[in-house]
Image (tube, rainbow, N blue to C red):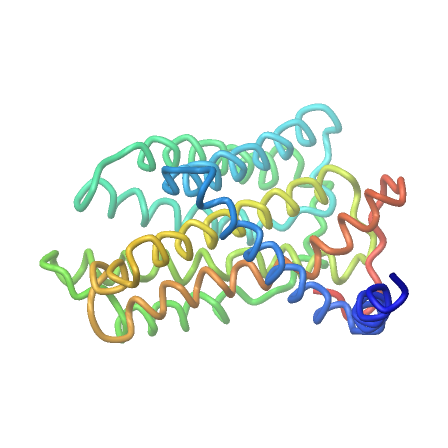
Length: 272
């Protein structure tokens, strides 16, 4: 028994000594391994993608509660909401002209609620908006995403504008949360509803990433060629992984804070 405990103790000790970002990465890897085991339980893995959009909608609902009940938008990034509305609008356009399905309806509902949140921050609760903290230059993400979408996009039969638009919303979604993370980095203290919202985004991104990984495994790689040729399939998967990794560090501290019974999340220096 002692011999069996030594390796486990050594591993746990090593993990505890790692910096937060390494712990977050290890957590993502472990969670992905667990999801692979669920392949035998969840037969239709497209449900993961639907679940991701449902969790995103749940996060928006948390924001709506915060804005209507507490009458404050403190700690929220208007820029993240605007970027979210932008990629949702582009994705809806692509859905209507390329493939209309259940995701189109879910995206429509999420876009409407996101626009409402933007309206509340810009007009109704403008006095509580922390504009000085929301200082992430959004052109740092919009321009690179636009350039990448021109260079790497699907090689399908659709019109070039539609293919570039599709790629643009994929890339923009992967980095749209960065302004919100900058706000939290500037304040260091995250109140509960904002923390719940960002954690919901992290879970949604994780489920979406899991969906793509499981689909690739299920099709034995054939999904990659179905998405197109060249670097586009790799860019899609890379975007999903980036989204998950960006939020992994925050989610680690969120869970740690929740398990410690703390309502207000305090982020140490260097996080996000």
